[in-house]
Each structure stands twice: as C-alpha cells, then as structure tokens.
Length: 470
Image (cartoon, rainbow, N blue to C red; front, side, top):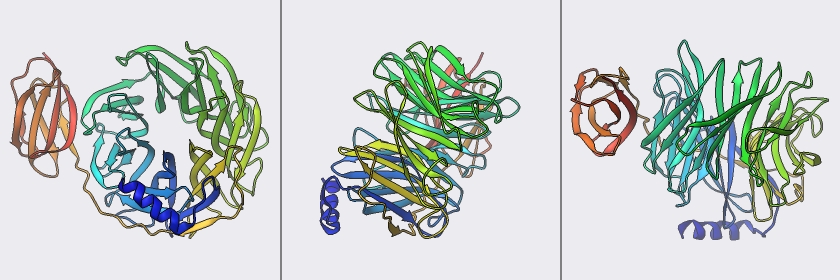
C-alpha cells in the first residue's frame, strides 16, 4: 500500500502517461552501473547494480526504484568500506527484494546476499563462501520461498567449480553443492524445470572454454552434463527452460570469427543440440540475458559494435523460435554503452546497463523502456544526478576450521559472540553458547552434517555447513 501511494504521488508530479517509452541515465561522478532490472508491476521498476559515486567505499550495491515514466522514486547504496557489487536482483513473492553479488569485506571475495523490504531498507545481509574467492552470479526463488544462488567457488591449488547455495527466507544455508571437472568451471545462470534445475556457465580456461549445461534432479544430483564449443572461447551467461521442455542459452563465442560474437544455443530436454546462432561477424557483439515470449520468439540483450552510435551500444535483438534474426535495436552514443539486464513490461521491454556516452562522468546507469517492438518514441536522453548516500551496515565474517572435523573446531572472526549447532533434522544439538575468537569449540557429535550458526544473541551473522567425520 505504501509503495502504491508513493508511486501515485511521483507519477502525478512527473506527468506520467501509461505506455510511455524513454531512455534515462542515473548516477554521479564515480563509476555507476546496472546489472539487473525488474518490472514489479503497478508501473514500478527496480534496478540493481553498483555505485562508486556515493556510499561507504570504492563500490557499493546501488538499488533504485523508478516509476513507469522513468523518474527516480528513491535510491540507496548498501555496503561497507570494502567492495560490494550486485550481479542479480530478485523480487520475491512477498514483495521483498533479494540481491546477489560479491563482497571482499572479509579479505577474499565472498558470495553476498542482501534482503531488503520493498523500500530498500536492509532486512539482512550475509556473505557465503570458503577460504578462497567465491562469487554469486544469479538467483531464483523456489515455490516455498527459499532462494537459490549460483556462482563460482575457487579452491587454492584445485581451481574453480560451479557453486550452488540454497538459503531460507532468513538467509540461513539449507544446502550447498559444487560441480567441477577438468579446468575451471563457472556457473552464471540457473532455472527451474518441471523435475529439477538446470545450470549454465563455462568449462575450460580463460582462453579456451566451452559452454557448460548441467541438468539436476530435485535433490541436486547431476542427471546429465554437457559442453558445447570448439577450440576457442565460448561461455553461457543465461539459460531458460523453453516452452517445449528444452533449454535456450545465450552468451559469447570466439569460435566463428576473430571478433567476440553473441551466441545463442538451443537444446532439447536431454541436452542434445538442436541449433546454434552466432551474431556479429563484422565486429564485436555479446549477449547477457534473454526472454522467451508467449509466441515462442526470443528477446536478447547485450551489446554490439556492428551498428549504432559508435563503439559499443546496447543491443536488443529479437529472433524467431528457431533462432533466426527478426530485428535489432541499438541504444547509445559515441562512447561505450552496454546492457546486462532485461525484463518485460505490460507494454514492452526494459533494458539496463551502463553508459559512457551520457551522464555526469565515468560510467552511469542507463535504463531504457521500449514498446513491444523494442523502440522508443524519442532518442533523447533524460538524466538524473544521483550522488547516493549510504547507511553503512557491517558484513560480519567468520571462519570455521577444520572442516571436516571430529567434533572440535575453531571459529575465527573480528569479535566474540554466540555459536549454535543444528543437526540435519533441524534439531539444536548446541544451544546458543558464548565463544571467544580463536578458542577451541568442543562438542560431542555423532558423524554427520551440521549447520553451525554464528552471531550475537538472536542475530545470526553467518551460517556454515560442517561435516563431522568418524
């Protein structure tokens, strides 16, 4: 109700008319960019990315709310004096917002999840990961309200693996899974299927990787895993479960040209390739997110240097259900302009990314609202100077080691607090007890999987799965 009233007041002030299209820029003098855009409904738009113009550090999560006319309703920066960046945004079924990204507040990079209310006020934020670098790329909500995030987890001396983490509505870890093989594996996108999940990313090295597609059952066991590509660079950034039960993947390829090209792959439900398309040929192009329309056709967002205003431009591509080109729209000026986020409105599409062509300086957030044909009524750029302020919120970091253990482990962190241990059936085997950083925690536990929760009083900062062996 509050959100609806706020929207109505701002819309009246802006003179909004339904169905309007626009190209608007937000930011200040630092580096600002958008990674995800979501149509909430009721003419409300949410955008998530990062900002270096305001906030507590060199980079903070940047969360903006826009009305249907593209006017800024509010914006917040969420972060610490470290580096926080957003990679995806989920509008949950209860109206709350969940942001996925990364933070190096604990030293090495960790996966970061932040939950806010509909007005951007933080409810909780936690980091997840091990002793090396870990990143979240994308997240989905499950029917019961749990959230699942996919990304990449590094292990020193081993390499990287696809990383899946499932948390409940309070951010507590329910399960964690790793999928690896020869070379480096990276998870960029995930989707649900009628009987499980699918994950897409890359497998290989920075110079020679293949598209990776993994099908998982409801218990997160691998049903099948396939790679697609040749002897060059190919990577998947987005995966959809298509209306025919197959999978659609978009990303980048160097397989067919000296240029970086946009890539579109279609498989059946068993991962058997049905067709592939590469877009670019005469210059660089890339694809980062896509949608399947009720007609079966696809809309894809990314960038192109093959046409437009110069350098890279935002590129909205429409293709047939069989992958053939229908039309492309570019948005940008004489400098680089790139889009990463795409969503559908009641009357068209939303595209979001960053621009060097317009704004206050450095990179600025560029959001475009189009009609159903991907066009805007004007090419004029609206600008909103936004040196966003921040309310700094500490991201607490603790490490539990060794893991696996035999019922004895050490918790290290910046301050003391409480520790609680829950078994695999959800029963507390250790009620909240005080601990001192670096002191040995000894508990009589039978072999199995346990969730160790660390915090102060009733506030849980971090949870971690611990394996107790024989």
